[in-house]
Length: 187
Image: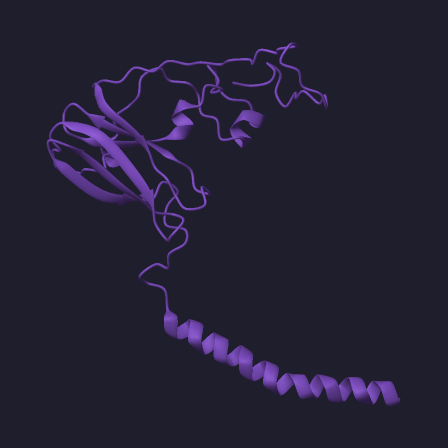
C-alpha cells in the first residue's frame, strides 16, 4: 500500500481527519509455485538491518528460503530502468523458481511441515530457523551473507602486529610532535 500512485509522492498535510479518508494506492502481484506450500515464515534478525527471506515449508518436505525482493509488487513487467535497478528491483516473473541452492533443509526431508519459526541471534547477519510438524528441523541462515563474521582465513597475527606497530608509532611520535610544536612556538 502506498500513499500515491506516483513514486515519492507523499501527503504533506499537517492535519488528518477520519472524515476525509484518502484510500491508499494498492499494488498487487500474484505468483505461482511448482509445489504447494504447507507453511510460511520470515527470517528475523536483532536490529532488522539485513534483508529478510520468506521461508516456505513445501509439501515435498523441503524448507525453502527466497529473498523478499522477489515478492516486491513494484517489480517492473518489462526490463527495469536505471532508477529501478538502483532500487534493486528485478523484472517480474509470475512463476517462483525452486533453486536447489536456496533449500535450507539440504537433502533432508522434513515430514509434514506445519509451522516455521525464526529467531534472531547475537550476530545481525544470522537468523535461527525451526520448522516442525510431524518432523523437526533446525538450522541457521544468513540472508545477506555473513558480513559481521571474520572468515576462517583471517590473519589474527597480522591484526595484532599492526595494532602493536600503531601503538608504538603513537608512543614514539607523540613526544616528537609536541617537541616540534613547542620549538615552532618559540621561533
